[in-house]
Every structure is written in structure tokens, then in C-alpha cells.
Amino acid sequence: MKESATLAMARKSRELQETGKKIINLSLGEPDFNTPTFIKNAAKKAIDQNFSKYTPVPGYKDLLETITKKFKRDNKLKYQANQIVCSTGAKQSIAQLLMVLLNKNDEVILPAPYWVSYYQMIELAEGKPKVIKTDIENNFKITPKQLKNSITKKTKVFLFSSPCNPTGSVYSQKELEALADVFKQYKNIIIISDEIYEHINFTKHHFSIGRIPEISEQVVTINGLSKGFAMTGWRFGYLGAPEKIAAACIKMQGQITSATCSITQRAAITALSSDANCTENMRKKFKKRRDLVIKLLSEIKNLKINKPEGAFYIFPDVSQYIGKSYENKIIKNSDDLAMFLLEDGGVSTVSGSAFGAENYIRISYAASEKELKQACKLIKYWLEKLN
Image 1 (cartoon, one colour):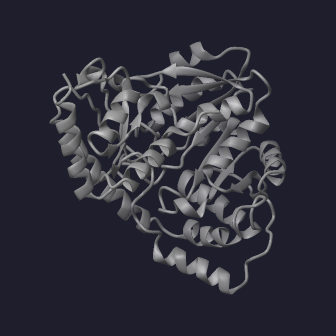
Image 2: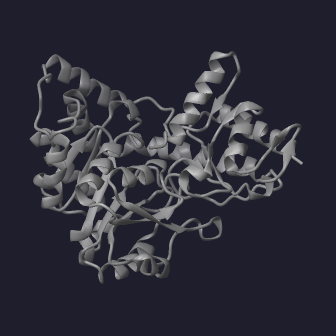
């Protein structure tokens, strides 16, 4: 199994910083905001009330009920408490879901660019990733025709995220309904919809594919608190699934980690019961940063960018820089370019190859405006050094 590319770049950044080099880290997908105070207060209260014992594997009953209400309120999804499983992050939710769904050599259709861990998780579960390539011209979205052509007798799962990591692309209701028209013909395919960036969405509204009645029984919806509530370190994710799949995930989780942190669960009840004011404030700031970064990167001559509609990433096409060099460094691929920007430019990004998209890099704008301005300035300066 390969090391996570995003975590690897974060590690290399720290190593360079320890040598005294100044690094602007735009590699990690982590909001630079603090967890809202009212959520932290709920956790403190839970500690004082001694919520310190083992909990049921899927989570406290009142937490599961809170999540069903959240799904209904925000996503128009109808799940019962026995269809919810809480885990130590959406990452665990997806990993163990693939473990229970896949037999050896089952195929998983995976639109690329995809989140780095999807591919490794599928292989760990002994499945076979079947990648559908997309590009910047179509905003990194697959078409119903591409989907149809990728389905075989071995297809078991379709796995995607919207808003997407790493591209920031958001599938509209119309686009998801068009894909659903294909899935209607294949009732055996499970659709895993990763919606962890739900609240960082710059379109009019977030649409969950599980809302489409004809395929709702085929959909597993993944979400969590890390991105929208700035709670990355709290480790809380959850899924809503058909009852048999949820039961299998509970069995799997019971043999690995059991339940996630009891204090985090109590804080999650408060977070998921709240209105979206705290998330809306972050969303507005992320949108402002997106526009700033697009403006600054647009000044770089050979960089091709689009306008992502969600998450907090820009995913530019850097193909014009492949094959160029600086001093004794030859940029053979996007891995080399990301390393060049890190070591020479002092800006940490992630190579597109990690996301199944060579000739691209991922730039996270989950950083302060001051850092983003300086980073874009450095990226421009060092890219122009290549010839």
C-alpha cells in the first residue's frame, strides 16, 4: 500500500520546516478555522458529566436519531437510526464499507480525479478500481455515456464525491439525475456518495443523489464533521445505508475500533442539531479565498485553471511545464513539479498523479489570505523560472 500523498507532502513540509526553511503548506485539506465555541462547550460538558465509558458500536442512540433528523432536514434523505453508523472519520466509514461490500476482483467505478485514499482502499479490500478519466474542459465530471460504458458484470460499486476532492467540482441535480437514469438499469450496483464537503458548496444548494427515489435503496451516503465544522482532529464521520449494509459495517467496526470517541459523539449531537450559521461563515470566507486564488493564478501564463464550485481546492492543468527544467532539475511529471515547488519555491502542493490525474497539481486554499497571496506569488515566480 502506498503512503497517502497528501500526508506524505505534509510530512515532507514539516521535515523542511525543521531544517529552518519557511514553507507555506497548501497540501492538506484542513480548514484553518477553529472549532466553533458552542461545540467545544458541549464537549466540556460531556466530560464533566462523565461520558467516558464504551458506547454502542454505531454510536449513542440519541446521536443516531440526531443524524436521521439532519439527513431529513438538510438532504431530504429518509434513514432510520438502525441505518446509521458513526466512525472515527468519514475515512473509516468508507474503508470499512468497501471491506464489507467487495469480494475479490469486484470492480469499483472510480471517476478521476479521485480522493487519494479511494484507490488504495479498494485495493486493500481486494477490489479492482475501474477509472473513468475526466479533464478540466468538462470541469472534471463524467457523463452518463462514460458511466454506461464502464459497467461490466463485475461492477459492484460506484464511488464519487460531490463537492469533489481534489477538483472542487459539484454535480448538479440535473447531472446526478442523468447518472441515476443509468443506475436504474443496474440495481445490483451500490453508489457511495461522499458528501463530506457538503457545507463548502458555492452553488445554490447541495443535492444528494440518494434523494432520487428510483435509486435510493442503492445509495450509501457518507458525511462527517471535519470539513464543514472545522473538526478534523475530533475524528467523526458517519454513513446512512440500507439496513443490511449498515449491520455489516457495525460488525466490521466492532472488530476494528468499536465506537468513536464518546466525547466527540456528544459534541456531534450539538453540531448536527445546530443551524448552519457557523458553517455559512466559513463557506463565505472560502469562496472569497477561491476567487482570490483564481485571480492570482490566472496571471500565470501557462497555467490552465477552471472555477471550482465547492470544497477548498484549485486543480490546475500544469502540462505546459512538463518537460521543462531549471538548472539541473528536469520536470518529467507532476510529481517533479510538486517537489520543485516545495523544495525551491517553499510552497507545498500535491501532485495530480496521486488523484489519478497526471499533469495536474492540487492547491488547497484552506489558508489565510496573506499566506495565499504569498504562495501564489512564489508559484508564479518559480514556474517562470522553468524553460
